[in-house]
Length: 406
Ligand code: PMP
Image (tube, protein in one colour):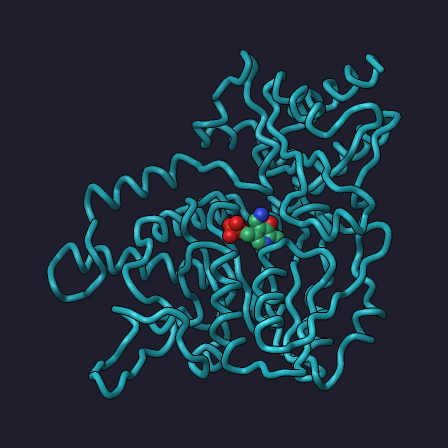
């Protein structure tokens, strides 16, 4: 990929200059969180140095600056997701809060005993627990789309689960544990054909591929800022405007009301309706800067380069005897989960850390899918555009050293 210079882009990320155990850091834990370019940190500092205020336009100059910065960030997210209106973009704390918001507002209001919720076997706990709790509370049925041995959605089985009782389908666009890219557009259309609403978890997709709400047609789409080179503590619920305005608010408080008396409360329309209280203004602005940054590189370029890098790493890891790759879907993004004969996953993680290479080991908050694949935990390197072939080579070298010892 001659047009893509990961070595150059790496320089935009101060933390990638760190050394760990005397070795240059290799950050292969991007599925857990991504590192931040200096542009994002500078933008947040600029906010606190020049714009900081609560957002209540027209009160005073700094309020106007803060409000403008916050609303500009919302508009950047709108463009990033290809949403129709900035009113469809709600700022929350992250993907977890986003899913809980939908479950506890729309789910509470519109789901009734006997209704069915469908999730996939690939889901992160964040897209299981809120639905399971709601199902238990309200007498709903939770059904699960199975996957094949490669970790791919079984579309025929999914079709069989859909019926007139299906009110909601919630699934991830990319699996955080296996890297599987799901056929999201097709799955959304299949759910809509039986009249169900659809929530797509974009926590692992937005940093690796272009997403477009008009093409995807999901009713809600959620993601976390920190997984897309933005700050922690900020995330997004996209929801179709009519649906958001037909849903009762989740939390109550300031900002979200038109009028309050002790007798009656009238709410704003979205997004204000779902943004009770003072939000994370500075980090929303930081997320806007992260979107500017990746938009300058281009999501298409990022996706292509990462595909190349993942193929490169997969080709090399396949040659090491006793390495079992967990998740071998034809269409994958970023993630290369595996186990290694003769070593616990923790031992592999520690050996990599010795060499300055950061990977996650564990169940990745996705226990059902790992158990489906026959394991409790894996070693999980996950790649981003600032990783290089040289990083991959160092990683592979550690695995070969371990292999030769046993
Ligand atoms: N969904 C998926 C697929 C994820 O990977 C994650 C984070 N690991 C989440 C949801 C939850 O995101 P957060 O912890 O930022 O709320």
